[in-house]
Image (cartoon, rainbow, N blue to C red; front, side, top):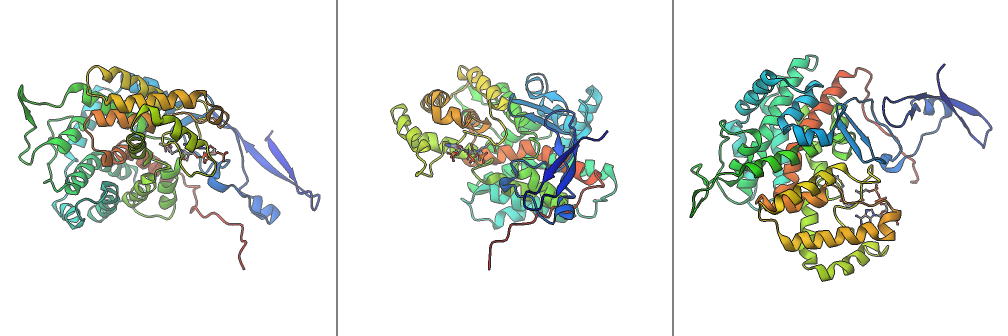
Length: 426
Ligand code: ACO
């Protein structure tokens, strides 16, 4: 027997029945797609706090327990035992790769990491000093003009090729956007390097491709730096129906090119309530400047008349802890002895965390440190410039966006995303 929910309109006394659909994990949903047809009214859910917008089997979050899984695999297991590329393969293919599959996937991504020469001209049109996120969004949309004819909307192999191409090219797009923003020449990908090492190389190398020389000889990219950044990419790979992913699906619903949909996701991610928080956190820690000023800013965060918010705190879904933040905190501790972590920033961050976790304001609102609270200190230690923090998020999340795009396209029951409104105008 079908489970249903009955709703009664107290003004007319009429009752309506809606089907309840069970999830394999997490809350069931009440299917209200016939609500308007039955009642002549819309439902209202500002910010979609109670709305499931799609059916998905990619990523699962239990916000109360602080649990995150990609294709059923816990994030802790993926971060500990698997690389970012294995995670990408898992998201795209619903299974972890065997050795041969991983080698083929890795090799293909290395070969696809180059950009069309024509796309390079686009970066040159941007004023230097502009934020790389804007260039990233523009370049990703522009990529659709180079690969339009390759897209057969009914062929999954083509979707998968589209996916591998954008995952492979995003680090190069991000590195080019950054190098142009500081007036440095572009560094081509080095296919002898892994996905993550190659990105650090494209950011750091001199125009002739050489790395910085220090008194001990040529400085290589340290394996621990690659490992840390790879973990950061894994932790950002997907996150269910967050703001930017919902935008990607929304654009997909109109039939637009996948790279344009991802470009829209990049724009949505830039905001400081979303991915832009990682850059804002570090700026905020620098603005606070010393441990003895923390109390002053905590008081401001609690003042309802002050718009100041503690960046890196709070999450729409996690109401216990953010499991990604926990992994990053562990990584931060591990890196402390091996890399040059800014001890002043860490002390300020630790003090904020300590106060916030014991303060009634934060406890009652279930405000815990999120992933962005810890990523900034680690990225700074990896010599990543602040403006590149959110582009790093983009690199990690691109696979999630394109996986969600594919799922959307394969689901023949999906409709154009077209909400309604409560009209209060003239
Ligand atoms: N500092 C101080 N107070 C906060 C904070 C914060 N960071 N976040 C939420 N609150 C308060 C709100 O003022 C509100 O208080 P009230 O009930 O007295 O009015 C209450 O907590 C609930 O906040 P909402 O904004 O309604 O919560 P929502 O779920 O809509 O927002 C969000 C979540 C956007 C993440 C919010 O917590 C925030 O702005 N955090 C700071 C930015 C940030 O770190 N973003 C990254 C999110 S993770 C990611 O996207 C990768």
